[in-house]
Amino acid sequence: MTAEQVSEQAAAWFDRGEFREVLARRVAMATESQRSDRQAQLRAYLHQEIAPSLVEMGFTLHWLENAEAAHCPFLVARRRENDALPTMLCYGHGDVVFGDDENWRSGLTPWQLSEEGDRWYGRGSADNKGQHSVNIAALQQIFQARGGHLGFNCTLLFEMGEEISSPGLAALCQQHGELLQADLFIASDGPRVNAERPTLFLGSRGCVNFQLSINARDNACHSGNWGGLLSNPATQLANAIASLVNQQGQLQVTALKAPPVSAAVRDILSGIIVAGNPGDPQTDITWGEAGLSQSERLYAANTLEVLSMVAGNPQRPMNAIPPTATAVCQLRFVVGTDWQNLVSHLQAHLVAHGFPQVEVTFLRGSPATRLDPTDPLVDWTLAIMAESSGKKPALLPNLGGSLPNDVFADILGLPTLWIPHSYPACGQHGVNEHMLKSIAREGLLIMTRLLWQLGEQGNAIIARHRAHRTPEAK
Picture (cartoon, rainbow, N blue to C red):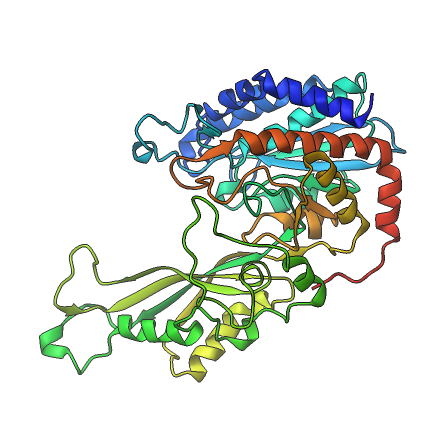
C-alpha cells in the first residue's frame, strides 16, 4: 500500500461518520479536572475510551497514579515492534475546563456533540479530545494498512490534569524516563495560525503568574476623615503596575524583556499573518512592543498582563480608603528570558521607581521551549504536511501560549513537533467550544501520511536529526 492509498482509506473512514461517533462518545464524558468530584469520570475516560483503542493495536498499558493530584491519573501505553526502529512519543490530555453549562447558546450543551455546518460543538471537541482522537485514528489507519504493524515503536502518554497546570507530569517524566524513552515527540494541542492553514510549532512561550500586593493597614478608613492623609494602596498599586508595563502594553522591566528577534525567527514569522479571521477579536495595532510585527509580538516577544485587580469591595464600594490592594499578573516569555529570577528583577525595578512597599509573590511558572527551526525534522514534517493538504503550512518557532512542552523537551530531551487540529476562534476555555470538521479531516490526512512516512523513513530522518549540530535558534 502507498501513502496515497492509506490516505484515501483514512478519508473514507472519516467520511462514513466513524470519527464523529468516536468524538461524540468522548465529549459526552464530563471530565472536568477543575472539579475534585470528577474522579470517576476522569478515570473512566482513560479506561473506557482510550485504553480499548490502544489494546486493539497491541499496546501494553501502564496505569500510573498521580501523587500530586489523586483525581488526575496517568496512562502510558507502549508498542515495541523492533528495537532497531525509531520510537515516537505522543501525548494527549482527556480533561477539560468547567463545562459552564448554563452559559452555552440555546440548543447547545457542553456534553453532547452538536453539528452545525462545519462545526462540531462540545466541551473538549477542540481541547483536547478532538485533537488526540485524530492522532489515535491516524495510528489505527496505519496499523490496519500495514497488516497489524506501525513500522515504528510508539509510546502514548495521557494525562487528566492539563487544565489545572499538569500537576505530577514533570515528576512522572523524571521518574519514568526509561518507560518514556523515545527519539522524537509528535503531538497536537493549541490552535493553528488560522482555520485554513495547517501549522507546525516547535515549542511554547513560557508563563509565570505572580501576585503584587500592598498591605498598608489593618482596616479601611473613612475617605472624608482621612483622605489626603493616608496612602491609598489601590492608587499606589495602579502606579506601580504602570511602571512595569506602559499605556501601550510595552514591558518596562529591562531584565525581563525578550532577547532580540533572531534573523531565523524573523524570517519564519515574516510569512505569518495573525488575526483578521472570522470570529477573531479586533486587534489594536498600537499595542505591544515597538518595532515588531504583530506576529513577532505574539510569538517572539515577552508580554506582561494584568489578570485581576482587587481593592475594597467592588460589589459594594464604600466611602473608605481600602487597607490593601492586590493584583495577579502574568508574564509570557520566550526562550532566553531570565524568568527564574523574576521576583528579584521585579522587586529591584519597583524599588528603583519608588514602590518598595509592593510585595511580589511567585505563584507558578513553566519554562519556554523551542526546537531549532533548522533541524531536519522540521523540513521533513513541513514537506509531508504540504503534500497531504495541498497548502503551504505555517511554521511557528513556538506557540504564543503555553503547554507542558518543557517536560518533553527538557526533562526527556526530545525534539518536539506540535501539529494542532484546532483554530483560534474555536471557543477553547469559553462557551460554545467547537471543532471544525474540515480541520479534523485535514488533520487526519496529515497525521496519517506523516506516520506512514515515519514507518518508511524513520531511521533515516532520525539519523539526520542526530547529525544536526547547529546551535538552537533563539
